[in-house]
Length: 147
Image 1 (spheres, one colour):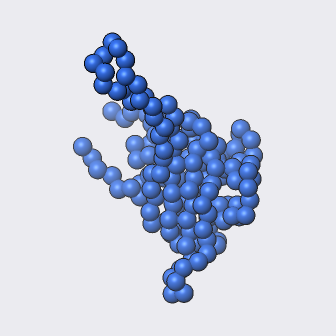
Image 2: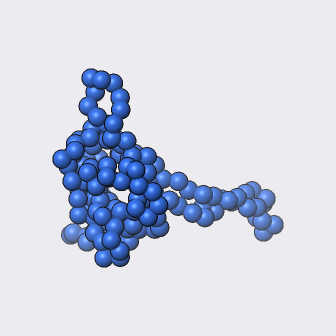
Image 3: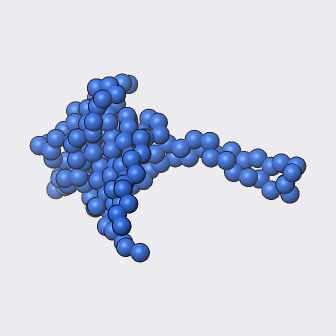
């Protein structure tokens, strides 16, 4: 089994301007950590046709990723997100795409939250932090299998 570095996973963002929007700006420069920050909502049930042991049902999945690094005011992807810092509601919507190391793509409308582009120790570079969460299950394009 081949192992692949996390840096080979690509993250793309783009302005949301309706259904034909695309994530065309790579969010990578000066990003040192990406954390899978997803959430699952579950419920437990026990039934008489079993032995009374509770079963867990996953009833909702919200995939989200937290990005951490250093802020570069000239990077187009970081600028797109930094410009949303004081926005609310629909203005925080973007297109978001993840391309996994096997080539499978996940893409859809998303919300940006927890934006930080200033603050910290005087000797530190300005931070770049944000959380991007898909608003619904993203469209999945499975990578073609190569023989």
